Image (cartoon, rainbow, N blue to C red; front, side, top):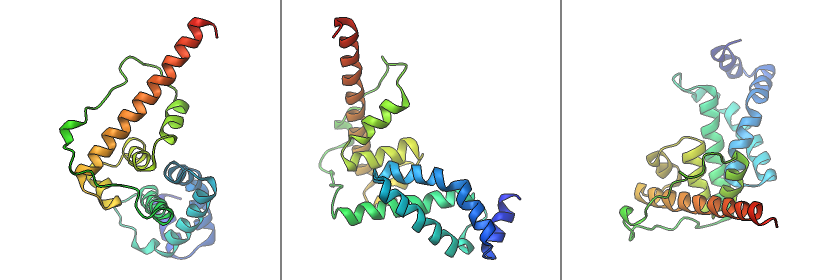
Length: 187
């Protein structure tokens, strides 16, 4: 069964089609949510609610969107809503600082960095930086789309992305330096 047929069967409220969609996408959507909310329990709840919402609104899916993209958008919005409920204000407008004032660091000297190390370092960032980095670097949203999702100015998103990336680079560099020292000092 192709995706269009699967969507049509879901529109007809077919339980087997809905179960197929759930089984195809649940793990991917869980990972998307978890990267944003950083809580297994919250991510599990968000996934359940998102699939219920998706099946209720399956008639609204646009033909040009893939089912996975459409579901991912629902999950990201639900994850961001969960964060907003936990904290009233977590992104501070930083318009007084110009874009040019924050230089972006790079990881040129480290060619082999494990995905696990990057995930660990991203998870240790403040939420306002972590969420923007996840949306930009992992979920492939651009700054304009992130600004719309988070209801922020695009310049704020760019600044917070740049700052978050710099913090990520510094964190990775510190870990790598400590590993290098440990290897060369024998301690």
